[in-house]
Image (cartoon, rainbow, N blue to C red; front, top):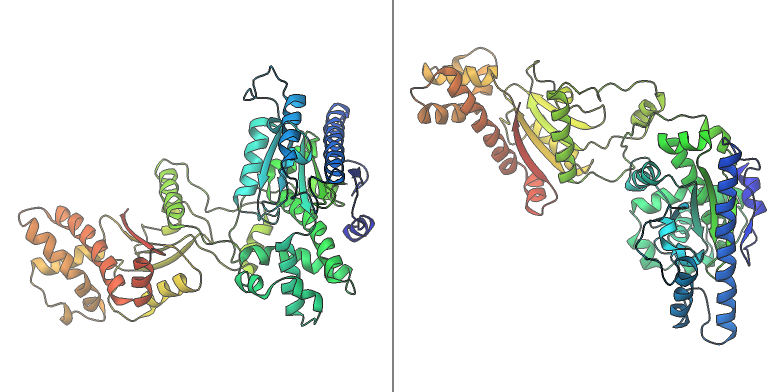
Length: 496
C-alpha cells in the first residue's frame, strides 16, 4: 500500500494540492471530521497564497532560485500575514487555540507558519533534522505534551524535497550496496565522512532502503525524492506505534494524522493524506512503555542520575513497579533483538536484601549491574573492572554508580576482624582476600569512632568503602580514568 501511494505522488507538486494516502479517514465523528477538514482546507488556502506571492516575487525580479532566496520582500509578506491573521488592533501575544501540530525538518527552507500563511500562534511547530523520530526521544514527548495541553485537531508530518540528510542516507545505502553511480558526487565526500557514524543517518536509512526497493533503477535524485516521501510515512508509523496518546486520539477521531510534502523550489505543499495503514495503527494500542536499544542515543549522565534518584523515590514511597513489563511482547522483543543501551552501570553488593533493579525501580535493559560481596574492587585487573570498561566503551554508558548498603555483612565482617586483630589470610577459601580490600575503610572508621558501637562503626565504614571503591576504579582503569577526566563519564556513590 505504501509503495502504491508513494508512486502515485511521485511527480513534484507545483501548487498545494491534496492526495489521500489511505482514502477514508479512521475513527472520528462528523463534528471532528468537519473541523479537521476545515483546518486542512485553511492550511492549503494559506499555502496557495504563499505560492502565489513567491511566483509574483520572482517575476518581479526581487528573488530567484528556491524559497530560500526570498529577498527583502519577505518582510512585507510577513507583515501582511500578521495583519490578515492577527489584525492590527489585536494583541499578537494573546493565546489562541492551536489548529495544527506540525513536525518538519530543522533544515527546511521556511518556517511552517510562513509556508501556510498562518498565524504563528495557530501552529505548534516541532522541528528536527530529517523530520524523524524514535520511540524514545523528545519529539514524541513534545507531541504528547502538545496534545495533552492544547489538543490540536490535526497532526501533520511535513517532509521536504532536496533534503540533504536524507540524500546522505541514500548515498550511504548505495555505497554499502557498492552501487557505483556518478550522481553520488552530489553529496560531498566530506559530508558523508562527517555523518558516517551518525545515529540520525542510521535512522533515515530505513526510508532510503524503502525507496531503493521500490525504484531500484531510479536516478539518484529520483531515489532521494521518494526516500524523502517514504520518511514521512516512517515518522507517522513511529508516532502511532510508540505513542499511546497519539494512537488513542487517532482511534477516537479527535486527531487526524496526515503526511505532507513541501517543495522548496515552488513553495507548494502536497497533502499526502493519512498513512496507508492508519486504520491498522489505531488498533495497536501501544502500552506507552519505551525500551532503549542499541540504536538509541546514550543517556547523558545527568539524566541517568535523575532517573535513578526518581526511581528510588518511587520505590521508597511504595510507588515502584517499573521492573514489571506487562502486556506488550513487542517491548521484550525490542530488548532481546535491538541490543542493550543501559542508562547506568551500578556496582553493588551481592547481598540479597539489596536488589539493584528493584531499589532503583528500573526495568530490564535499564541498568548494567555488577555485584559482589562488599561492592568492592579488589584487583586492578579482573572481571568486575573489565565488565565496567565494556559498558563504558562498547555500550557508551555515561554514569557509574557504586552502591553500598546499610548492615552490609562484608563490611561488618571486616570491622570485626580489625577489632579482634584477626589474620584475614588465615581464613578459609577466598573470603579473607575479599575482606582485605575493605579493611582500610574498617580501620579508618574504628580510628575515628573508637568508642562507638559496632553498628555505628559499620555505618561509617560502609561510606568509606564506597569512596575507596570509586578511587580504586579510577586508579585501576585507564579507560575509566580518561572518561572521568574528559567528562564523558560521571561516578557517583550511594548507600541504600
